[in-house]
Amino acid sequence: MTRTARRTRALALPAAALLALVACSAPTEPEAPPPVTVTPEVTESRTTPPEPEAPAIVWPLTGEPTGEVAERPALAVKVENTSAARPQSGLEDADIVWETVVEFSVPRFIAVFHSKSPERIGPIRSVRPMDAAIIAPTGGLLAASGGQGGILRMVRDAGSQLLTHDGGAGGFYRSSDRRAPHNVYSSAADLWAQADDSRTSPPPAQFEYAEDVAGASAATAGEDAATISLRMGNGRPAWTWDEDSGTWLRSESGADAVSMDGTRLSAVNVVILSVEARSSGFRAQGGASVPTLRLAGERGRAYVATGGKIVEGRWAKEAEDAPFVLTVKGEPLLLAPGNTWVEMMPSNEGSYSVE
Picture 1 (cartoon, rainbow, N blue to C red):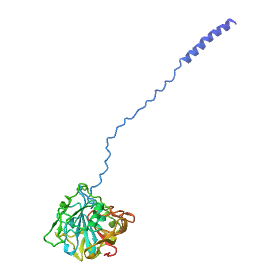
Picture 2 (picture 1 turned 180 degrees about the vertical axis):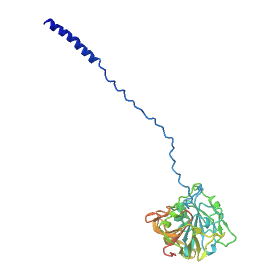
Picture 3 (picture 1 turned 120 degrees about the horizontal axis):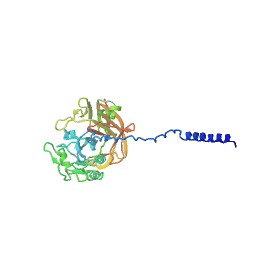
Picture 4 (picture 1 turned 45 degrees about the vertical axis):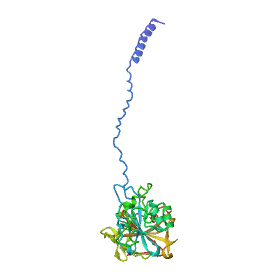
């Protein structure tokens, strides 16, 4: 190697070193900062969800609103309906009145009380075979003047507590202003006071009710009716719509039906049930056959009048202690809140017409 070559190589080495140094000292890009996760602050809602609205409190046998339902059972009372018994006392305060036809084609009432407590009810008469199935669903009391032993057992066996004047129950008395047997009376308070310890609760509802008259089935699906006339055995009751009071006004054989204090008897709902009557096997005075009605496990036509209209439907009663179920075209047939009179119209000696 020549001197010149050695010198050139010596000069080349520092240059290479310098390039390497420059390369090593070149600036580098700064590393990206780690991502910062920001967790949003969650503020817990302090809004309290609204509580579900409590169901309205209503009287079970009328569907009418009330602040409190009385803790007492239903009280059914057998009330006479012959000309000698009129005018009666207490019918104007009944939640439900059932009219049936007994022996000799005579109509008789079962007045059922719960929301009101009349001081005088009567004239009170004896029980009949159909009473057991009509009253059993209320699970309450049945007050009567008396009755045949076999019929009394039917009522007890159906689950009602029976109170009778002839049986020595308290609270009954004979009024001096009428002749026997049309003068047995009592008060609701005196009869309720004798309820046994198992009968302190309100009765179950016997019908279904709309919130108001406008929602009743007759009002929504019925036809106009001014007067409904019936033949109930020897009885000729009629119901005439009164727009001012919003009720049906009752008449008997063309005369206004009134209570002892002069109050016109009226009903918010009039229910007509077409029922089959048959002999019960019991006999009355002179051997007359005592009728009963085929009710338990049966069904038939129903006509319900409310708000100046009447609609045809069906009734069904699954068992003796089951209430009557009213339907129209397969849907519940709703009554208007208020008192109800039920006409148990025998298919063999009863009829009705609408004007």
